[in-house]
Image (cartoon, rainbow, N blue to C red; front, side, top):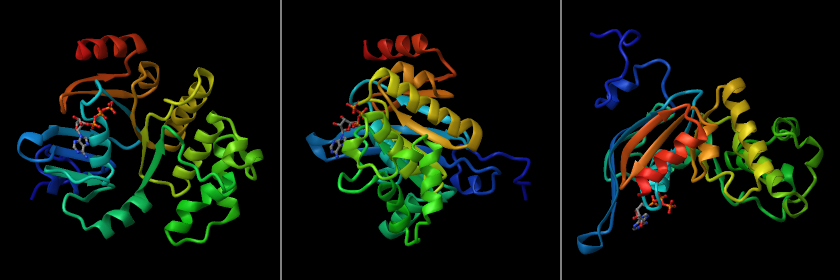
Length: 262
Ligand SMILES: Nc1ncnc2c1ncn2[C@@H]1O[C@H](COP(=O)(O)OP(=O)(O)OP(=O)(O)O)[C@@H](O)[C@H]1O
């Protein structure tokens, strides 16, 4: 038998990936996803193999309609793949039941969205406590306050979303996503609704989470500056991985994107 500690996972063999140490929080193998049938059929992803390693921040970019959201949703177990395999937090979720997926998402996955998606009638700390409640845990005020302190908002715990700036709301959303200590944080355009200064604060916060806590982040963005904050950028075009850049500058990202959009 092959020694799993000396042999990495074969890209095409998801079963063996379980034996690899450390396990990347998200692994996608030859994933395809189509919607509809006949003339209405849309091929959103074709043969996509990507791994998002532990403690890394990856940006996903590409022209409109290139499959970024579909990739994020398939990676997070929010959408089913047509073929291929998805491993989330080391678990093959390709054929998992909805109940298994929901439980795994609550335990292992955090989400941040462009429009924050906070509940307006709840205070910041009540919003942050929500995922713990949904997971059946009784949230401790200490954990909730610590999550808010991590994003620099300890003094805003009793504020409601309308009493916070956009950047502050996004930081509450990040605290809410992180309070369950997820294996992976998925961010869909997290700076898309923010001014430049607030965007920079959010990007610095994500950077610190990756560097100091070893958080894994997967972020869809249209913004080359945001993408250049990540460790790597995966470019999609027509549902396929068209390119990858490691630690690119914003100018390199913009140039590559322009070429794909051309
Ligand atoms: N539920 C669906 N039913 C049918 N087609 C879909 C569905 N979701 C996505 N698509 C199609 O799949 C393709 C990829 O869509 P997707 O939303 O993943 O692209 P995107 O890169 O995120 O786009 P954008 O940057 O505009 O948000 C598009 O052609 C889209 O119209």
